[in-house]
Length: 506
Image 1 (tube, helix red, strand yellow):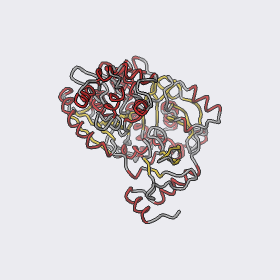
Image 2 (cartoon, helix red, strand yellow):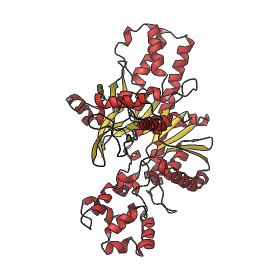
Image 3 (spheres, helix red, strand yellow):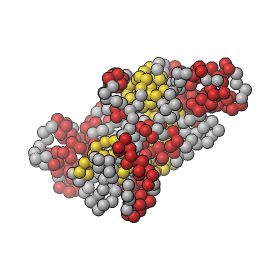
Image 4 (tube, helix red, strand yellow):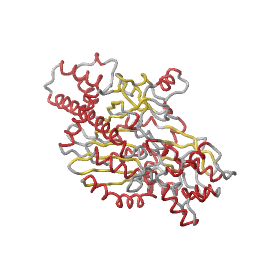
């Protein structure tokens, strides 16, 4: 493909090589293979459902680990703008009618006083219009109220990142998800009197986000008697992907430049890789609850962390034994049992391996990053589920899969997907250092074949977009993964503004 001098300058500015560009364009033509599945994960088959006594034991395990002075970081992907949350309200402001007509619109306006941002909106409208929300609604000025929430000269909720919106009401004022994550960080991720919280933020919101965090952190530091270390990162331009025309040739902007798009949340594996920590919690920005419901969330965060450190301790002791070379054949059988039963990674012809090859295999399967993922019973929410999927080396292990990775023409696989008992709410705790205390290089554990292609448009022209392997899908494909059933109450995402009217957010 012939690239102009301008193209080469554009690539250099982003930190993208010509080879990488050519590889992405080739992927548009070849597509990505579907995954080969062994079946859905279930309780007793990759999903752990701890008893009440085990819950206590795992919490204790985590408390003891924290007391060792390990470095723990809470990692919050917070880059996304909240525009999708308000899609229906944007539609209303553009509609050719002036009063709420759809069920969504009626629900929003009928309950407007229940939103945590109501007071801020009311004050703003009084300043701008000389009238508050109630008066304007009484006059039928619904669109004025909606625009007050969305517009740039209003609360600007149509453009702000989700982490900056007022979600929950408290006696001392409303809180944003960013603040709820600071509180959570203090409650389960603090050690040595410090809580480390890292937000990934888009470039245009970075300064605003930093200022808001600086404004609020001291309040919670005083409340919980801890010191916060708060850091930020942006999705790297080098993880952007080129867009293509439907025929697979590069899509160009009106000025002739190549169109690049953010590569999706899988790009954040690079950000995660730069975090210096022993254990990292990963949870989406919008999955937060008010204080009255936090106890359950905090307990189960400690449980999944306890499962992680207990498994890691065992894996480390086996790696040290293999290093020492003092193992017996019985020891190897015990390690096989651990890899198969506890880490849920199986190899059909393992019995045919000689001891020397077996040691190489076991070391490879033990010495890699580890994550525990909370899963909830399937209640029909869209998103990924826990499965047993085959790897390139012929083994199969636990993975979180999105529907795009499954061959829709394969009836058995579709049955697995629709009848899966559990759903992944993106609630992870990760161990990212090896048994010698060295950090793993996380990009090495990405399955590059698990990206996907979607159809989009720009300026009315169709285009193909390339998504990198998702952060909790293909980007962590070659990690050791274990699933733990967590209560539904720990999963309360906010996908639309009306989700804030659910009891859990009131």
